[in-house]
Image (cartoon, rainbow, N blue to C red; front, side):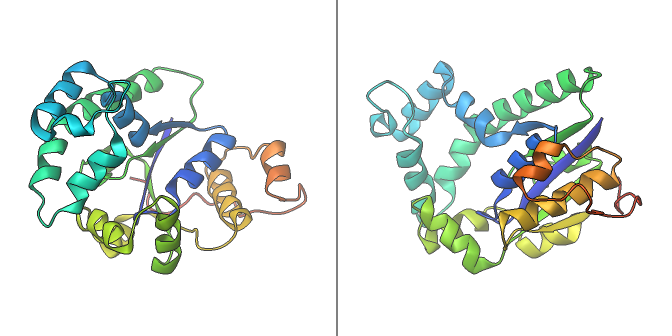
Length: 226
């Protein structure tokens, strides 16, 4: 099983890249989805409410992630975010490692993609054969962030909690340019998979307008296998 870790700037389009990999037949571990599941845990909810108050609870008893996000990213310091991470990150790590172990035991899994925002900070890159940097310029990322309801200041605040974009790119093995069209990004990912010796499904070629006669790449494996 080949393990690929995704990283990039905030709002660089890692979720789209992940979805492309799934269409290419990969299995995916999505840290945001795992975090969402963790936030539904009764003990975690109680600990969050104890610190942040009842205002972060929705009518159904679940955590209001948008309101909680405004609290931890809206202040001038990092204390609130640090406290939230101390509650949820240990449980997220346990669940991600458990999922990885289960998938490693499956003979059907050829490619596993880790979509984890803090890939390097959490040392998940040590479990990867390749790390891909999803590249998008700042203007594109700001536009995408606005679609999530984030201001430029909130984008900057979220990014300040991570390694710099330059450092992430430097520490990655492969760079995917995601500032252009979906078809362009999808083609780059197909080339990457083909270099790994994986077949590009006909359905994927049709969806992203890649002709069956196209030569996507040579057969040399990507550089930087860990």
